[in-house]
Length: 375
Image 1 (cartoon, helix red, strand yellow):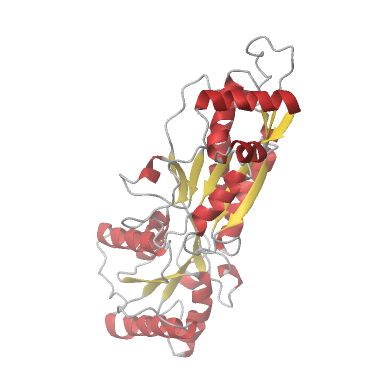
Image 2 (cartoon, rainbow, N blue to C red):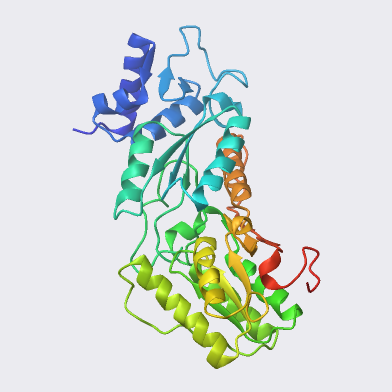
């Protein structure tokens, strides 16, 4: 049976006085409450100076305690040593795009003397919440979350149970629409729409009037389409044909064939002279096929890729838009650490939504020299 909060607090202190130190997970299990509930109890008792909170454990402050301890004696808020902190991070994968995001977060966390623990969702249904629950049960102090939302934002009725978590939480490379509970969370993400618009603007400056976008379906592609459309309209360019809507390709070969056909027809039948391709890996396959078909790059089709993971390594070095992935991870971790170490006596700052702007890296495939002038 669950104990009333006052009785539960008394029982926590009784057990702690007897044993001196207890792991939070063990204490929650013994009292029959969730780790989240117990962490709330521990935080309240720590603020009162009735116990000391360390990572994953609580400590009896000693028989000499006679009131709230001097500043610096409690492991909470501004008095909390960063070395006591553990940050949990849930990402779909640590490969490809997210390798640098995780690297940036790790550098910031370790620079503060704290520890980063990473969990993977692998885009599996329900795995985001499962991994968050596991991290919380292990006693993490805050969360960096990249939910597996297919479009980068939760769809109608979709959402991760994150807004009500009992620890500070920062969304990483994700956002939630106004009205969704997660919209009130801190957020740090790449502004992919801005990145696509930068690519369109650069191609327009080189004289191209019809710029196509070929983007594989991903959480990034929704923003790329938005930025591409906005830039085409703002610059008064001619609209390029949109890719035909087909059922989802069952194989990579089928997907590449559809994209190749779209680009070939866009050039030969619709006067397209420039294209933005997402991602680099797709471009490295597609550009040689286009050239083998007789479509010269960049003479007949100027190409800019998106992501800049391997663009510079292509046979024809590819101009690319590069999201600042490492910066996103670092800024997200720094924002979370600022929440974890703030003085609880001070009012909390409003939540922050930070958009990090990608950069354009000019190489050979767009027909311009690295200084941006036509090649």
